Image (cartoon, rainbow, N blue to C red):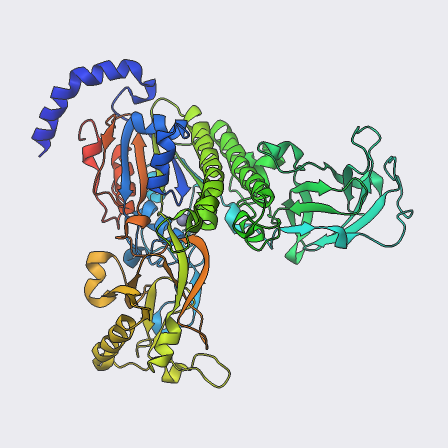
Length: 637
Ligand SMILES: [Zn+2]
């Protein structure tokens, strides 16, 4: 094999030599000592290709042109974010990492019931060795920038910027309900205003804010045009002065600097404000604030020198408020696009704040392995993929045509993020772009517990709670695409080992019988005991019975009465069987030692860590079972 590959390489040499002149110097030389990795959450290959063809992802295009690219990368089962990142960084599937979902059943089984769980991002112990641990053992300096965090790595020497562990509470909107009926004359140092100031007051977490709507004399806009915010009725204590402006691309100029507040437990936190609207007559306004974020703790002193915009984490756009209609009527519900414009500004702010942190860290900290994360495009894919999927019933092309350019904008900011990191890449540095899963359009949900209840496998008590003494199988609230058998080796379990086969058979029959009209809804059922090793499913912290649903259907973990199958407004989701084409994602390697223009096939997310380890001449991560993508390299080691 190796000999053949070498021969092929020799034949390619003249071409390579020509290419070497045309491609960046980073690719010259055959050995990398450093790496930058950027993870795009939830990159959908088909959409990436559309945008590449239209020239809309210039940085990704360059990266692919000069490197090895896979666009059919298999996620783990379930194809969710926490298990995806656990697998990306360890090279091992969920059955080995123990991260079988964004929430994970608690272990050991004999101490916890099938109803108990832990957060997969932060609490559940990662049971496999991460690539960054391998790198550190080899003396490399590692920076982990907001990669979804995993617990159980107490001895970590890496510089870890962990904003997602420091968010607190929700983002929100302040409108005219915050206006005070009393006159505002109790203010001291009242700011100059051409119209009588109108007082507002509201609370975020533990912090009370007082504000004034004013007509700023230095502002040529007629009528009320400005809101000043203070922590008391004192114009000398102003924390933010906000100009009203509708949502626009590049609207970040109108965001406040991070404003200090007290989060729950009286802890220091920060929030950013944006005044999307203020009526000239002062009758109403629309003020948005980001989710309070505590300053993330970093085990390096140098972060103290970074600006507040670097340190005050945003993390996500306002997708929840947007979805609830908080930004106004959505396009899908007859809106004019205003709600989407506001959401897009919040998404751009989150992206650009992450970029600021990464720019600062790359320039100010020393590193050999730099891993960065962005929650995009996933967040926007969840909002809009369902409307863009022409295979779903009731697909509306007019809505799709209006939403597509908006999703495109989100992909473009993720490409900008990539461009920033590429611009800061040293010459001896491998660059990898990774993603954890694809997404599919959803417009139906299947409440499996209702089917289990009807079939007598799940029983509720008089209060509507799960009766563990009479329950054999459940679709647990962790909602990971798998059922749990209430076996006797679990706390309060009742299914004896001898009874397992019978329970499994009943469950299979019940699932096979779920129909939506004529349509079979559960397409495949896998037993973790027999299919586990081949599929990377099961394990102590995994499920017992894994399922694949028909396209367009999503799992619904609710219990209690109601229909088994229900239609829902379209949305995007992932978590399904990774064999489904829609769950596939992308991976790119570029830099020293990596072939130019190579298309990689038969790639899984578990191949990333072994391949990166190989490129950096590190030992393989201990628990990795993924393969090294040798075919993407100029020469084997
Ligand atoms: Zn994800």
